[in-house]
Length: 409
Ligand code: CTP
Image 1 (cartoon, rainbow, N blue to C red):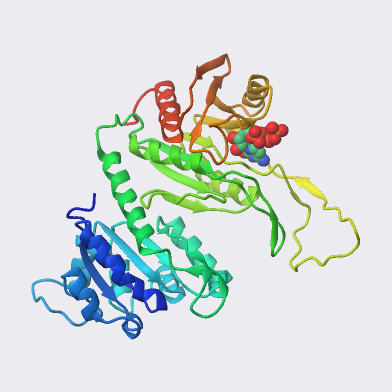
Image 2: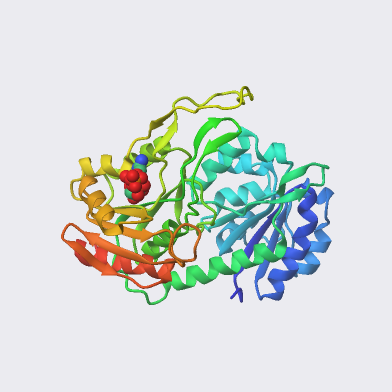
């Protein structure tokens, strides 16, 4: 899978830099051509010689150390990469990337590359949760950078929490998956949605109660991400508006990260006018706390009541604004599927409604598969058997493409 793939690995200055040796070794064993760039701080943790010996390529750390007169090294590395991965990525490097700073070899290469970028953060748990770091990661993921979430456990600083760089074995798997998806995207799938602009929402929204508590639901985002991938494979220009999701979207899909129903509404509305198809696979909270407390709420009394108010119904609002857009909703039900799905389709002015019984085995929120029925205003369009979410996505988009009349010139 990785044979001949050119991977630029940026190593920054965290204790997890020692893991980059294993990462390089495993990538090379799989046939990748790995080019390492280290920051000055990374050199405090691991030597150039180690990574050079393992990668069998020169290791770069100084922008001005031009070893080959015929090329400018950072541009050359930026251009040759099929993928750039920063592992470990410190809070400092994430901040530089988010704000376009280019003051060393790695940040300069990151700014110059047009290759997909993956980032594997590693830092102290409090740094990882700092609003500045969260905001920087949000900025980057909205630009299409994908993150390999750190694991939880004992950190080198003595804290137990989230911030430990994902293990090299898992990172290699994610990279392999990335290349396998990129290959299948360019393989012989019919490009029925060429030139179409598609917005897909995925995952559950998060409605804040206070800084440490929130209301959410069981949605994993798998269905929405599968639709986004299938749409990309069929030639569409895709934006994924993601709430809380448990899966990493492919690096070449533009992701707008949101939390609440209101944020999801704002993000979708901004894209609405320009969209050909909007697919609302997200599980949007119907209610939110009337007021999110900006301080942690203290315990008092034996009972407590939380006053909830209705969130905006995004799909209904889109239905009201619909002009040429093709609108698809999802209805997760536990009973009376057909009645509820058709009622929602009419109330929200959708073109298609995808209904699933979340209580059946092999369907619903966290499952890898789904069993859906697709309705339009006249009734059942298609009842699908248990299929992978990828296959469901593909069937749904094939029906959609047929209804909107082929590729967009
Ligand atoms: N939806 C939305 N905004 C909301 C609630 C739902 O856009 N505030 C969308 C969902 O993304 C989904 C569709 O509406 O595509 C149906 O969601 P669902 O929760 O099943 O429907 P509700 O209208 O909330 O009805 P109920 O919860 O009573 O079943």
